[in-house]
Image (cartoon, rainbow, N blue to C red; front, side):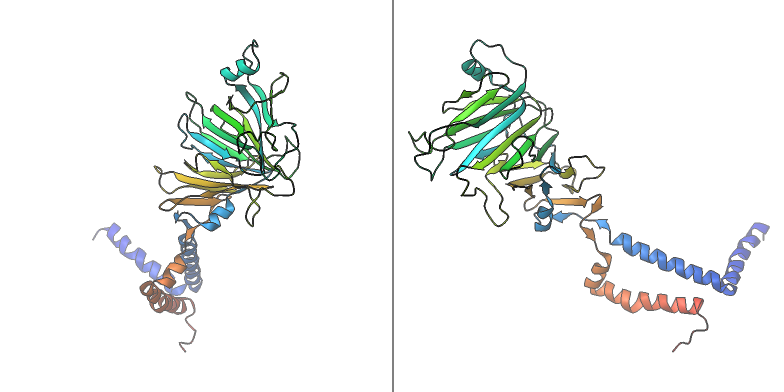
Length: 366
């Protein structure tokens, strides 16, 4: 027999002898096995898992606070000409618009400001003007707003939704700010009386302010504007302050829709306005080729939220970088009778017997 084979036979023998003679080594080995088992249980209970949507708990987390956070929809499915956001006004609702980097549609630019050159993008507002006292205070003129991706514009990489009190001060109106980044968005807005001839109602008289031009009172027909980039700020107020426009126990305003009624996107993040390294909430589809449906945009006085997902969709969710929904190894063992029996009646007693024999040889068997 070669010397290498002899050495190979001696090494296991010496290790066995060291194992038998060194109680400290055996105890350190037992501690290491215990720590390794605990680590495996911990890792087995923190494996992210996909969850079936919708989930009330996840929807409750999809909230952005006024002036602090924003909701970001990643790569929303908005084709050229498709709606990004829409609103149809109802009783007691007055809607106003502020734009940062916009121009009027050429047709309306020549109609309202004849002979003026086409201006560079600037600030435009469509707001409620002064008018006579309403003859029917139980109703108002109804404003309709449609925001679409402009034809020929770049795809929307991220659609940001948030609230700020910069424009109109810290009053408790309902508001949403939408920002499509570098993608151009087309806005069409019109305000109409609820019945023919009733043009003296609250909210009927609208005022258009475009750049340095003198504000003009608008007649009752649609106006189109093009937002080249930047924010679109929409405010919704009650015509009668004594009657709230909010609904439900959460006091939210739900008359504004993503898209037509919903919008599909590659995921959602809730991030601080002062960009942090990790989002407070990050939800993305469980499969790379899938999208998630977002709907029921809710505008609160101090919060903005929406519903995530619909039946048959699955997602993985993270909060501050940690998975919210994980596989629970212990719970799985407890619910499976075979695994439970093997763990409680075989593995644990066998492990304890091995530890007692090798680490506590003087312990009584009683």
